[in-house]
Length: 121
Image (cartoon, rainbow, N blue to C red; front, side, top):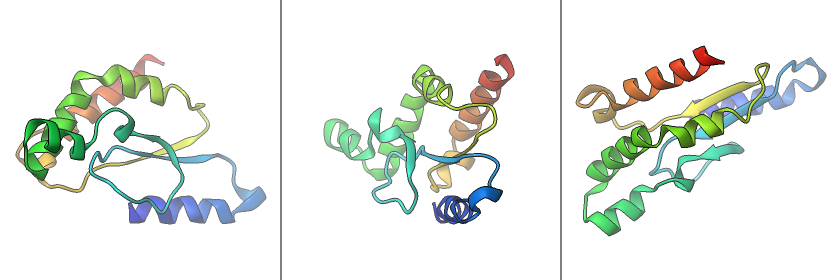
């Protein structure tokens, strides 16, 4: 999140030197505040808070559930990604919980699907 904020702010200061629009999308269903302007937000699809309340899971279990839910609903992400032009930059602000990268290959699967989406275009 800090990196995404810094890059978006830096690019905004470039004025006429900036050649492309810079967008940031939130893929962290547990995020609460942002220092950047959101282009789209996974919390429109699912939130950790809702999952914890409805399924009685703890924060880590709810986060894993949310990311698995995203995997099952990649059409939502594909639709959001399709709203940007080829000459625009899009940064994805992903959750920082290490379990999503080491214990379960969820983020890798999401990135692999994103790669397939862009290969089709």
